[in-house]
Amino acid sequence: MFTTQSKLRYVVVAGVLALLFVGSVAIVATHRAAADDPGDPALRLAQALLVLLLILAVVLAWFAYASLHDDLNRRTEVEQALRASEAKFSGILEIAADAIISVDDRQRIVHYNRGAEKIFGWSAAEALGRELAFLLPERHREGHSRHVHGFGSSRESARQMGERREISGLRRDGTEFPAEASISKLSLVSGERIYTVLLRDVSDRVHREEAERQLTRAVAVLGETLEVPATERSIVQLPLGWLADGAVLDVYAGGPVLRRVAAQPADPRLAAALARLAERSLDLDSPSRVVDVLRRGTMEYVADVSDEWLESHSVDSDELERLRAVGMRSLLLLPLVAREHVLGVLKVFRTDSTRGFSDAEMVIAQELALRAAFALDNARLYETARQATIARDHALGVVSHDLRNPISAIGMCARALLSATAADDTERRGLVTTIVDSTELTQRMIRDLLDVASIEVGRLSVERRSVRVTNVLERALDLFTREAADREIGLRIEPVADLPTVVGDEERLVQVLANLLGNALRFTERGGAVSVGAQRLDGFVEIQVRDSGAGIPPSELARIFDRYWTVRRNAPKGGTGLGLAIARGIVEAHGGRLWADSAPGQGSVFRFTVPLG
Image (cartoon, rainbow, N blue to C red; front, top):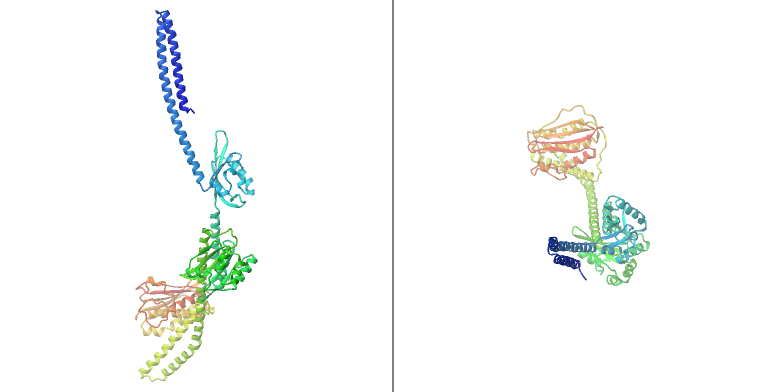
């Protein structure tokens, strides 16, 4: 085989030889003519010119050959680079995980890469030459053909497909899958067009997004109740449909036996089999894998639940038959772990042997188990708190009924002894006075505890009627007039304009103001001042209590309304730490609010509002 360069070389050599031959013949002819007529100068000149032309032709032929040789070398290099580029591009197309398919104007497949083979299931040999439509579901074929024709006649060179609707592909086995696709076109010199489609299978992403939506819904469902039985039923029911065909929850409650809760799927046969399985509780000495997962606290996946596997993890033949009736084919055992404690094991399974759990589904299942664990833990904590509240309410009932009566009797007897004791018997009068003060403090503490309990459960008694604010101010002030005088503290009502009536419970409002005044007097040094005032606001009356005390540090101001909180560690004795919390509860029960403004060294101002009548 001759190469192009070899052929060119032979052509040039032949041309040069032909010129030499023609030139030689011409020179010989002119030489003979000159011999016949030696005196003719024209012949001599012609002979010389022929020699020069022959030399010039040889030189030009050589330059032409060299130029053509260089051009051919460059062309060879370009062709080699083109072949290398095509091979590289073809290799990229072949290793791409996405489907890359090219079609002609008639939408017949002219290129079909390995990614397309994996996604659709058809080999390249089977797909080449066929219309692209056979890779689409029937309902999409006509619309897709119009889409390609419209794109071909447009000025666009590329377009994202599926902008207005979803795109689906059709596998060889007849199953559909969601996809994303884009299309580009190439116009050839002949006027024909080549369309290239890049298609990606997004099944995993769609399934993951759906699972995340289901997980979000599950979290919302788990937050609907704090009852332990309802929470357990929700946990075992949530995986059905989107993650598993059935589920069983084995709950650990501290004893040797796990409590079993079964899901209720729509399939009546499976529902009956699960209900029958739930009739038997699980013992911690059982060979069941549930016990192992409960102890280890780690997930376990059984891809193939064979009959041998069931037999090796069953207590007896009866349990084996119940497990066989359920029909599990793949199984996930998920520990419910909250606060480093395993609360139980959620067992989710599928009955289709062709559908195991993927890695992404296992991650979602573990997320579901984590949320379920915290929901169950919260429900248990709520149940514990509720039981504690019931016990506390019972204890407070005993306190209010069985202790207040004898304490009242002690106080009455002590006051009687005090009135019967001689004025000059200071020692005895001091002892009896201490008893009277102690009984009053005990009664106040009992009242505070009962009020706090009532506020917590929303049962604080408030009798609403029209109340004059000045009456509340005067009654509260009268309670502390003597104490203020004994401590040389100025106690007064600031001048107020005519105030409208408010709606509320006068006794409770006096209690609020008394708590604020008592605190103000306790934290005001001898010789200080405490005042009470009021003013009208939009829809409310605001009542203020001012003192000239040491003030409250900003870091502690936000906590002064917490129960049992004391601002100053050197505060005067005798307080229960509940006064401000009770006052806030009473004010909020009236529809108002209570707050404080204070700064160290500048005293404090407590304000609360009461709705107008």
